[in-house]
Image (cartoon, rainbow, N blue to C red; front, side, top):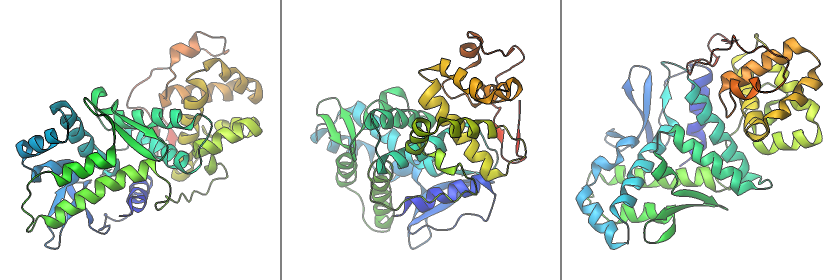
Length: 339
């Protein structure tokens, strides 16, 4: 099950409308509303069940009894049901609007994919922060998302009695436990089981099919955290110039996406813990008007930094006119920065 191909389609659809989604092996897209498509498990009879509703095929009382025999509490199972349901939202295609949430989901997934292939110093710590915030964007509550942790190539799940269990084992126990009628539903159940295992591998383990990013932008490699951090160490001027280019109002959709990812990397890896380092950017640019535009873009990007942090330091910028609205974002439809 090649989830890199499915996610690549989601990204392409975000950047350019393109054709309606096709089948990806046993996975299909089901239209939930006009221009909104949910990933679904399909079978040979063309029946499809959206993966956000995977549990509809289970007798939940029976599943709860079976999982208790494996040592899982009711709270454990509740968390598992929520997590497995929300995993499908990673691949939702919604053409009705482009939102900041979309950018955050793309950012965290792309960083997790890069860092599982090319670890960096404190890699597991960074990956776990990325995973936690990704799960937040998927509307998973704190109790559930705090149970998941990446350790090397594995995703671990903290349970009330068993301490930590490999989440792949949890998934196998969920699908191996209930007394399921295996007739026409067999293909659907098998697809769902394979999908949930594939998501864990997609986010946690190297060696599966890789997502190929083909952006016509010389700074496209700075999308990925390891490349960004390496450039920040070896050639910080290149990072500063890429940040300056992020406020160009005449970028293509692809380049605008790259710019957003670079702004988010800078906020996550630098400004989140050291907001004062933004003054290094000011010194490098040597242009207060340009620096002001980048500063405003960082504020509107809403990635761990806000106006209050910058207003409290001597940036040389009057930020009193900056109004932060959760609806503001780099508009990829019209390729302009809304401020």
